[in-house]
Length: 139
Image (tube, rainbow, N blue to C red; front, side):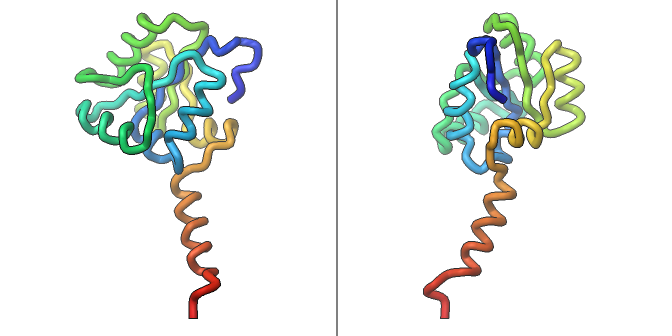
């Protein structure tokens, strides 16, 4: 996911479900800021749901959906944040369709995580489970 020679001229949007599927969303945003110009969250869910999640995980976003749906949010973000690329990270076929409809590049979360070396929450949970199974103080 390295921005390469584009100098950070990318706007990156995460669908909330994609962000929630990451082991450390805050660290992902810090990493993404190194190779993007703007990064934020879009969702069909109410604003307070997005706000609560991002605050809890210390995610500082440049934009969020507000009271709009994902498609309208992506269209507004593209108008307000003029960059060479607009990339939408999601988790479903619906997310891919919305990206196509709004002129955004779509990137499935698993592909993004693999390219950027981000840990998925499911992988972290499994590692935590096996770590607990190997405790030194366990009788």
